[in-house]
Image 1 (cartoon, rainbow over the protein chains, first blue to last red):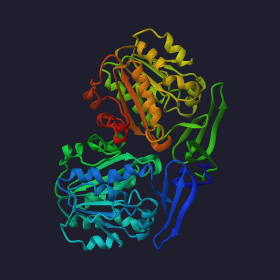
Image 2 (cartoon, helix red, strand yellow; image 1 turned 180 degrees about the vertical axis):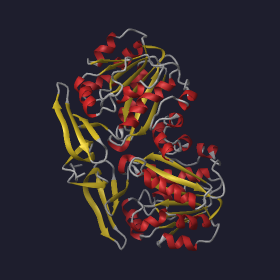
Image 3 (tube, rainbow over the protein chains, first blue to last red; image 1 turned 45 degrees about the vertical axis):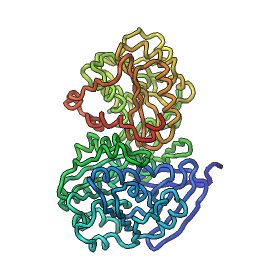
Image 4 (cartoon, helix red, strand yellow; image 1 turned 60 degrees about the vertical axis):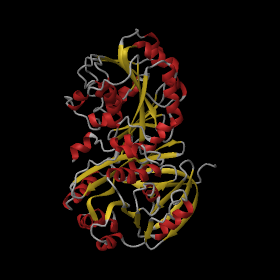
Length: 280
Length: 280
């Protein structure tokens, strides 16, 4: 490969990540956002939405696995799943590895994210034709208001930062709609940012979930090389019950492969660093 | 603060981290390297050695704590400690928090790193006058050849990347000198790079430690916002005995404050991601 002809940069409060890219593969402006795909020098392909990196071929496996497996192995029998956002389908692919899962509805506002991913990230989309998967390209906040009560076991919020319209997806009213859609013991998980960059937003998110009457809330953390600070969190909450149903034996002997997640990581990812314990 | 007047960039195999800096505070060329200190926009001060970032005021606490506390709480009674490298004194400060520790010898080749740190990172150097601390500004490989046999409990290799002369500090002969200096049950820890960027070097390091006849070897991992990929490892090994002496109650009720480390993190940091298990 030649040396980078151009660079991709993301500015997160003046911390910048530059990836040398060899060329731009795709660029389009949809009604929702700008979608760009680059070929990078060493991280495979990179997708950005409005200039924010959302995934690289080489590193997205950690994020995708951690959005799917901890919550699914924490639930005793996850059958009906909703993924909100997640248009690149990497999380969906992980969810569909669970044979308990009977149905996954993915609610992504921008169909083009999925279509572009099918073309440039086929490895993430290889399960998109699974008969258990349904794709809805609609507004998630409206959709969740209308979902049948107590019809879901797990809701995964694989969404972008709480800016603009997306802000609503980090607030109590939306979490209440999700709570209503969950069965007793059902669980929700949302990406919740970097502990080093946006600790305030992380605390806000937990507080909003708490206001929405979830029984117990827990934050997990994991590496995220393409996101600001390289370290990310997701926050889980459960309806009506405390956590404590980790199916450890299933996780240890799961009939599918993962690259980051395993039963040891499951137990480790909720160990809270001292400054996070102190902040909560 | 004004917008960055200049930028600091580190090129790690074409992954670059850019920090907006407001100004350069210090720059000097020593017989060993170029030392530069910048004021950054949001990460406090940044020190680079030959252009590689070694610490920022805001984030170095994670690295420093993880180089000190897991190994010290894994050892039943760590009294005599050597730190190799560690010129910015952040790890030293953490080591001196342990009241079991009677003596710490820090062997740093470049005295200027320590003097510059005393000036620009006084918070890391506030224990430098502790009567238990001795500073030697000599070559570590030569020094360790002459250290009295069985005189140390813990050796901490807080060193830069295995490039140039530093390469020797990642090889079997040096690890054998360290083994000789350790008492039975004594332990060594070395920073061992990013699992996402330099997995081969991490495997090499473990293999070299194994060749040097340590009884058990274990890698731990933690976030590292200023290093390439934002995720870092350290590898520990023990002389003559297996691990298993974690003083958990002491760690839970330690009489000093930490910001990242705690007993839960201690247990979590050795959980190996699946791709690392598969690689070893």
